[in-house]
Amino acid sequence: DTEVTQTPKHLVMGMTNKKSLKCEQHMGHRAMYWYKQKAKKPPELMFVYSYEKLSINESVPSRFSPECPNSSLLNLHLHALQPEDSALYLCASSQGVYYVQYFGPGTRLTVT
Amino acid sequence: EDQVTQSPEALRLQEGESSSLNCSYTVSGLRGLFWYRQDPGKGPEFLFTLYSAGEEKEKERLKATLTKKESFLHITAPKPEDSATYLCAVWRRETSGSRLTFGEGTQLTVNP
Image (tube, rainbow over all chains, first blue to last red; front, side, top):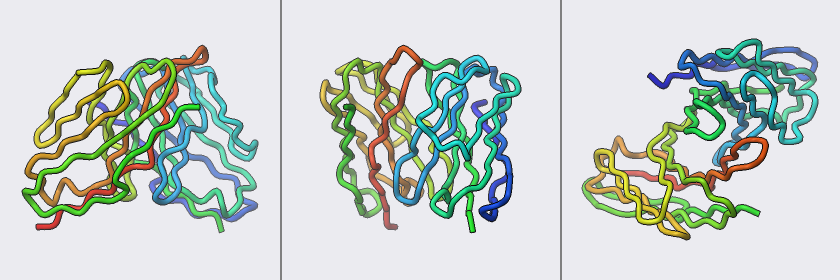
């Protein structure tokens, strides 16, 4: 089973709101990722966690705050977002950072 | 800087009309090349990993091949359900982990 789950599926938030995206996997994977994908563009890497520690931050604005509470769970906390942050946010996981990445279904975020 | 170029950007085929998608790349320290399929509004679905020139992988109507500079995804006798965007990604090892660099994708439409 290579299932990564993400909640919520859709999220609409105002620029002053605080919200969180959640990602979960139960495959025993030790690396987890956040990607951002705009329409008709490929996924762009945001963050990489390896063994629950942040290993890559692709110079993402501080209004995006990742958190990895345990090896199965990855959160992305959102605060004071801009309309241009509207996108599909994808979570992925892999056995380790040198293994195949499996993606979740994504959260469609709209910032109004 | 890593570069991944996919062609064509879009491809329309009739059901049963075989064709190939191309992914050309320039990357130092290549660890492997991935092919993913992505349906609209969903996360990428893993198809293949290729690690060395000359390697081939097959799955149903799809066959992926790899040379030192490019990869091909051959689609034999496609069906309408093969319609999707096909993403190629190169995988490079770094000291902080591994990184996927995606191409822009080929949007495939198979008409009945």
